[in-house]
Image (tube, rainbow, N blue to C red; front, side, top):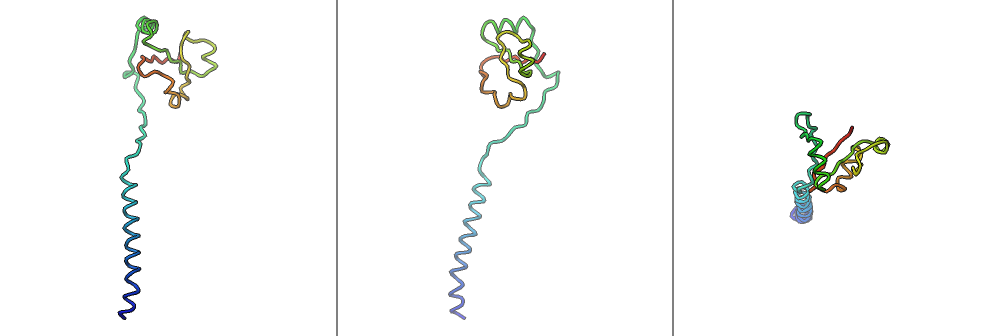
Amino acid sequence: MFEQRRRIFPWIIIVGGVLLLLAGMIALFHNQPGAVEATPTPASAAQVQRVSLADAKSAFDDGKAVFLDVRDGDTYVSGHIPGAVSIPISELPDRMDELNPKSWIIPYCT
């Protein structure tokens, strides 16, 4: 009987060690800070900052603002503000790096 306990003891140590290792790995990966993906909340019309045409044109002329046309490409080609950047709204999340975050970005769709 003592001989059986002797053979089982190493297996208990090995299995216990493997379980501790797995528990440590699970804890490590579970506590990793990951990128939090934010879901944008649409703004209501009351929350959208309005700008007068005169203020927008003045900022654009001074190089402080960029007009961003968010309509599709065909609509942009048919008529747009001269100098406006065209990024269709469906492509905007993937193309935000094309815009200078220090500029006043004035989007329009009509």
